Image 1 (cartoon, one colour):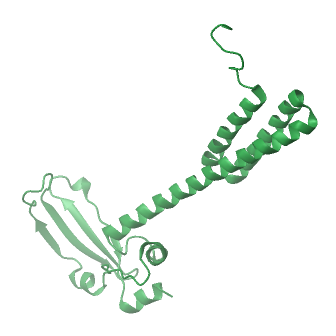
Image 2: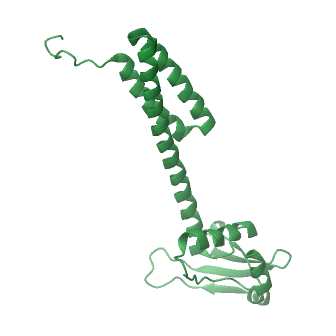
Image 3: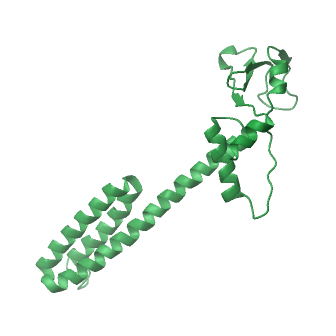
Length: 205
C-alpha cells in the first residue's frame, strides 16, 4: 500500500473532514429549515475546532476553525439561495400555468398574486399585458345550456364531449363542465371566477 501511495497522498484528516462538513452544510441548507441548518453548521464548527486543537494546538486551530467555518457558511448560504431560487422558479411556473389556462382559476388572493407577479417580474418597464377576464354576463345567460361536441378532426385522442354551462351567482363563478360521452367518470369542471369591471378594479387596489 505504501508503494502505491506517494508521500503526502493521504489528506490531512482534520482539514479533510472540515471540507466534508462544508458539503454537509450545503446539504443541510437545501433540505432543512434555515434554523436547523444553522444549528448543524454550529455543530460542525465545534467538531472541527476540537479536531484541529488536537492536531495544531489552540492558537493555530482557532485560525483554521474560523477559516473552515467561514467556508461552511459561504457554501451553505449559496445552497440556501439556490433553494429559494428553485422555489421561486416553481412558483413562477405555477402562476404561468394559471395565466395560460385562464385568469380566474383560484381565489381572489391568487389573482392578486398573479397580477403582482406580472407587474413586478414579468413585464418590461412600460410594458403591457393582454389577458382574458371572464365577465359574469355570458355564463349567467348561458347557465343550464348543454352542447354535444364531436371529436376534433386531426387531433389524436380527441373524443366526443358534452359541455355544460353552470353559473354560481353567489361566488360569481362559471363552472365549465366537460364530460366525455364514453367515459363520464372522467368529467372535469373547472370553476372560473368572473369579474365585472368594478370587481376587477378592486383586485388592483
